[in-house]
Amino acid sequence: MALLNFLRTQPAPAPAPGAGRDAALAAFLQGHSIEVMPRTAEKIEDFTEILAPGTRVYIAHIDGTEIGDMVRTAARLARSGFSVMPHFPARSIEDAATLDDWIARYQGEAGVREGLILAGGIAQPRGMFDNSMDLLETGAFDRAGFTRLHVAGHPEGNRDIDPDGGTLNVSEALSWKQAYAQRTDARMALATQFCFEARPVIEWAETLRAAGMDLPIHIGVAGPAKLQTLIKFAIACGVGPSLGVLQKRALDVTKLLTPYEPTEFVTELAHHKAANPDFAIEAAHFFPLGGIRATADWTRAVAGNTSHSKDHA
Image 1: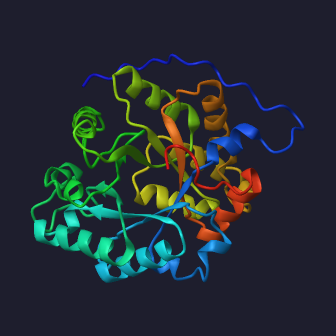
Image 2: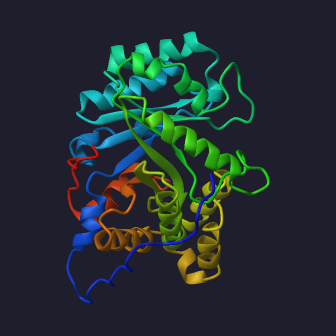
C-alpha cells in the first residue's frame, strides 16, 4: 500500500495564556488507558485509589512471564472494576492449543473479552506463530467472543518488520489488519509504541487516513520518568526519530535533574484533535516508565478524573 504524505487538517490553536485547566487536553485524556506488568502491578495495593473507574488496563506479557501470573493480575484488576486487555505475544505462544488455553483461563478467571495481539518481544517464534496476523487467522478470538482487539501501529516504522528502515512490510501488515477488521465482530484499533514528538505522529495518522486506513489509533505516551530511564527504554523498545527529542533534552544539564513529563507532546495532539474532530487518534495509552502511581498522578493533575466513558470504550 502506497502511503501519501500530506495533511488535510487545520492547524491547532495555541492554548490561551494564563488559562486554567486545558479543556482540550482534558477531553483528549478522557478514556485513556495504562499498561502494567504483573510485577509492577504488585507494587500497587489498591488500583481504585489511583485509576478512574473503568480504565482500560493493558497487561504486558514479557517473555518468560508465567501465564498464571498474567491471569492472576487480570483477575485482580477485573474484580476492581477495570477493563482488562492482556497482551497475546504470538512468538511466545507455541501452538493453537496453547492459545486456546490462555484464552480459556483469562475468560474463566477474569472475564476477559479484550486483547492486544502482537508479535512479541523475542526475535524468533517458539512455535507456529510469528506475528499478530497468524494469531488472528486462527479465529480463536472470534470464537471466544472477544469484543475488542487491538493490534500494533508504528508511527516511526519498525526495523523488526522492515529491516531496511522502510515501510513496505508495515504497510502491507496494516492493509491486512484493515481487511480483517471488516470480517470480525470485534472492534479494532491500532495501539502504538510511545513517541515523544507530536508533529510526525500527526503526519503519520493523516497519511494513513489519506491512504484509506480508518482504524482508530491509541497513541503511546511515556508517563513521567527520569530522562535517563526514558532514554534507556526508548533505545530498548526501538523508538525511532523522536528519540532525538530526549537526546536534545539531555544536552541541557538543568533538565537532567527534573523528570520528563509528556505535557507538551500530549497537549499538541489534544489541540490538533480539538481543531480536527475526525483526527484518527481517539485515545492516549500510557506506558508508566517512571511508575504507575506517577503516571496516574500526572493524568489527574492535568486533566482531572478522566473516567473511561468515551464511545471508544
